[in-house]
Length: 298
Image: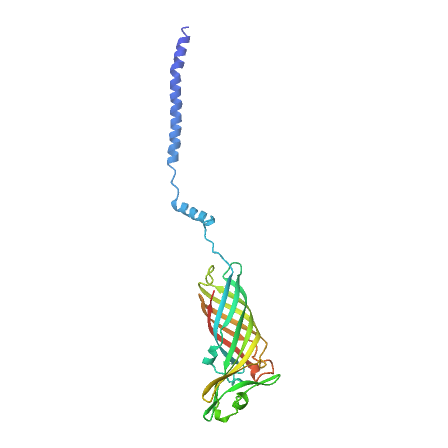
């Protein structure tokens, strides 16, 4: 009994001591862990911003331009010329610039731009109507101005010769003093178009610079001539609708460029005006050329 009592006292005193040691050890461990955690370097702010920007670029909030096809309605106001491939005297004596030629109706083209792989390039098929108009030069004969005109003398033969007031204007009375002031002819076409267009602005093709190159197949639908003259001091106009053996189908190339909805355009035909061997002498070597301004309506 005497030996047992000291053992019980030792166990009772040692228990709090052991508990204190364990607690002290745990506290030391936690303190060491916390100290170790607190000594870690703070994260790099610039790296975080870069990661945020990278994630934002991959997210749904990133901006993607809406790339769509588009329509165009273009109106051209051209001046028409004739190019002589032989570099000599033109076989048709037409004016290089005439106010009378500005009076003809403008050319119009409807196209549909189809994007090429959501790029700035588009293929633009379309249709349209165009016309060519030329004014003949007059030459003096004494005190009078004499103008030429197209005359169809045979089914397969059209010539260009001076106007005879009695025969061509149906003015037999010499006292009428018929005087010609202008002589013009024009031809109209229905056009089938194919163009390749580049737009500087990707998602708004009508807001920036543009340029296009295309081809045209023209089908003749009408042709006419007009002579303005005076008799008995009164102004008269003699108009006639005639094909004059003008070519039925014509091929050509077109070019346009501009900014926003305004631009410049040019067109060149690979064919002569008249059917081979059926027009005035030398006209197989002339080619139509047109230069003008362009307006895109939508």
